[in-house]
Image (tube, rainbow, N blue to C red):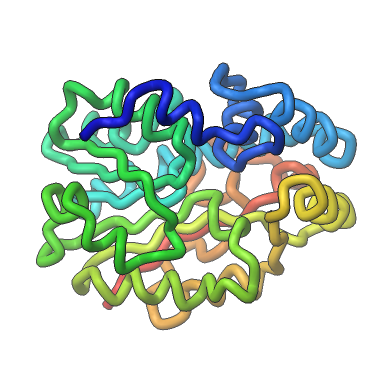
Length: 267
């Protein structure tokens, strides 16, 4: 039975910020609450460019998905996708290949409600409310099984979400379980907060204190998520440097170095 608005609204905790809603704030969205805006205001005190960082992450999502479609990938699992906004994965993928299929996965009830409304008329796209820390449940989900052919290459996307997994939650193992389920020729796409400056370390303290998650890992740690796969050029780099559409500055700002990303192919 489909959820009613009252049912999903009752599941929303407005007393503490959520990952999806905080990301919506920095993308200048409207699906957030005062507690989320207050959290972002605290981050701005440490990293004034945090709104720009969200834009860089959205831009690399577009470049990365276009690249994967060019490699022949026509199906995507977008884990920790967040609230729908402009230029979502299915917009980018289906513009390049109208046959592309996308499953969004997020554990925030607002994502399900807004996502289903947005995708109601798109039979090649689905939203699954589940926790990405449970790969078995997600891979067995009826919508995942309906849209994703595990005999064909899959784009596994963990864009701006792995840093919300603590070390003791085994993020490496979680990545490996998803990649073990997809065939050779599939791709792993990750972006991640990076401990690249003193400001980033201060931001990590605020994320952990106020949101409860937000690990700013080193470039080496982020690169480690790609172990066992063919890391593609230019490797794991600050987001603006990953296959840019235009010129980039010779010296990057704190915000431009706050997140690193990369794509690897499963041999």
